Length: 201
Image (tube, rainbow, N blue to C red):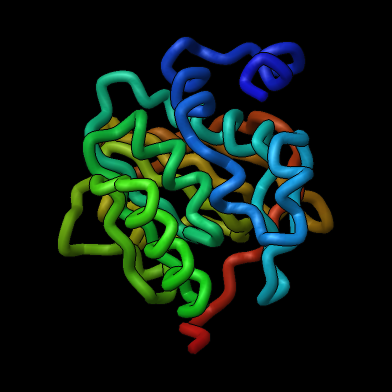
């Protein structure tokens, strides 16, 4: 699968290895196991989707992981993106607002013995102040703008990657925190489910 991704989007050795070492099949709903290694997004219940491996690889690459230690992910979903990040960062902190999804993800992490991913049920827009500051932040859901709480939890010089809603379109955007403010760089158009308020039990 990593080779297929590499044909359409050039991967760094680190991200390629992270994709190769993450068992995508473990994160796919039972009825879709036969599609686990196709480069497609797949439904996973609660009106959510497991991102395509291509999208996960791109988002991981855009984070510029080299030299970074801790990453905060907003929108854990199935846990697949966090599992890939677990090969790239010493600490992965992932938040999910839909409780059944985070409970399933935690089970997968335990089964796969991924012990550097830390999970939390919360509205991701609050971030996770306890473990801040983060070197990187990844939004696995689209948002109109980066919340101030999140900006405050990123270290100076840190990077945020997020699908930003612009009218009817979404654009993956990379932000660098410079002098307390964000400098943005548009990367490519995309399609993610939106960040929503509150927690769903």
